[in-house]
Length: 98
Image (cartoon, rainbow, N blue to C red; front, side, top):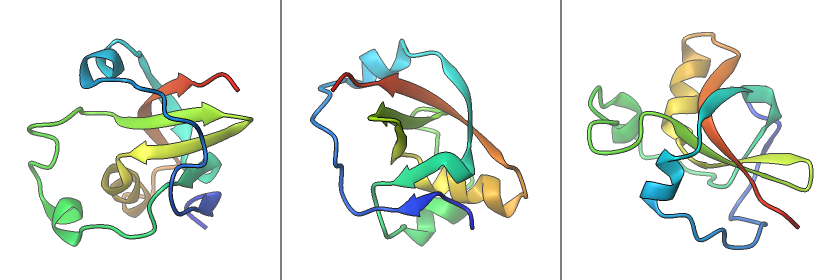
């Protein structure tokens, strides 16, 4: 199993973080098997595109909420890591109170 669970939607409240605010969150490693996805579908073009991070953040965005790690953005990065047989993903992890 790649992820802890495949979810649909965001069960946590809106965090209100802008792209600029996400950039201030330092990246760290997160195990893929600890992540719960917030999307159950993937754009195949995003997975195969070598320049998929050219206009975006280099790191996935993860929300830590109520003891779970939710992969909010970067599903293609996480799957790429799994296909390369890596167990961890570098992500910006924001701890949401609640």
